[in-house]
Length: 215
Image (cartoon, rainbow, N blue to C red; front, side, top):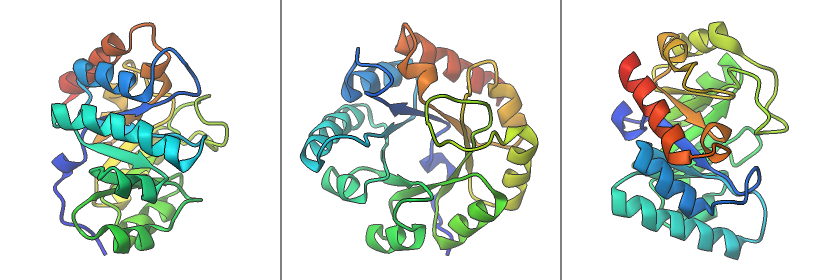
């Protein structure tokens, strides 16, 4: 089951909010800075704390996103995504299955799925994923269990194997953008490149310019 959402519903620059690698900015503060820099999708990821605290934090990010008309995608937590009426959900291999998430969400919301193999990407698309988050493309320390580095050749294979947009993730900086898009990726998702930058807005802007120049 594939979805009919256009690629433009996915966004090309996903900035993932974080309060684990850094504590200078809240999730909402990072979203404000990322959107000001040109992010066209915000992903809220919070794996710690109770559901109440996650809902409060996500609601604040959703308020920021709604003000700027930028989609919010919640990572992992279907209940949080539904609770704050996010534009979509992104699930990993150990989260709720894509097909089940699609049944609950219905056809309209964006549903992303992480994949590190071609088979995983194809299965996720068939189950109803709007886009595939493929990686890690480069070495990354943002996620302890990110898995083996996939590289540009594997990214290209993934892009050739599915029809939905592929968002590359993992160790991507502005210097990698052109090569990643040349390999077929529709866009990129970043965490540490923005969250741990001295100036998150400026870091996002650099990524945005790199994307625009590569298109």
